[in-house]
Length: 294
Image (cartoon, rainbow, N blue to C red):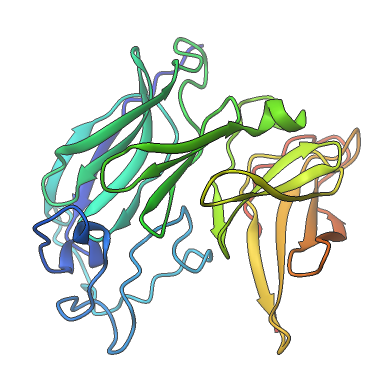
């Protein structure tokens, strides 16, 4: 049975997006401020929510002083909008929020005013994906970093846009380029941007994990042979040497789904561990790994 998803997005006045001071120009509208944000502890920078699981990749916000309870009718709704089809979440930085959606005209990255819900800009990057299928529209959530918005399309197209204007700086289809496997239901990995790199599970031969330059999209490194999955890569920093790994769940080749780690600050980058996480009969994995490092 076909299922069409119409998004109705409601913003409620709870977080830093609506607590920060009003910006009057596009350049400052994606910069978080701390002075007027009553939800942040003293001295904590307002980093917004730039990634599908937040600024620290862990699903945690440092905001506090939230309401202990809501009215019986729920929190006050600031605005609602229908955008179209898709599975993307919303990221928020400064006075703007970003998401991906699909209409009969194509797939889009959309930038909205956080106060009003009005469209500031939209960028069309592809034709509709499975418009009348069971799971129509984009799967990944865009990522904000250093004034840019990075997106991933179900086809494997990865792109970089200006957060101010929506202008495209570069794009590359990693599934086509690296012969990626493991995302037969549509590429779903939200781009992970760290240390000037866009890190992506791709699942190609010699390219299980791939890092592109955040500036121009060129390949910086690739490693591993495991197929990809439907979850982003997550960075892990640990010990005094500031070693940084990335981890992602992957479907095994006729075996169990597994979690794989890559040491990304070694030269060269190398695969370092693999751990099975589901039965042999389960090929597809969309679980986001969470690291507890001591």
